[in-house]
Image (cartoon, rainbow, N blue to C red):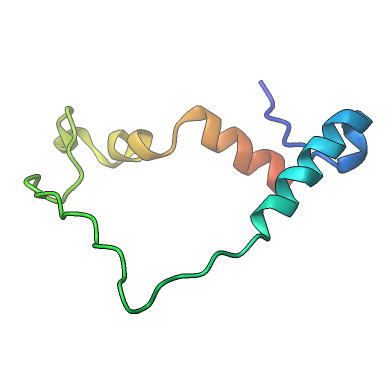
Length: 86
């Protein structure tokens, strides 16, 4: 299986879809005033209780290739090959 990555162009959409997308973009450019004398409260921090590490269900003592298979699956390798062969 070969993974094909395609960039979508604005010309790929119908005129109604183009208008809708451009309307969405114009709404993004609407600025609102921020009251700096009374700023909003920061969201509460959530407790991080996990141990930061890579948590694996398999035994890595099987060898280096087993460890590599965890991070480099077939889809990633196919994408690397497709991008390299362009």
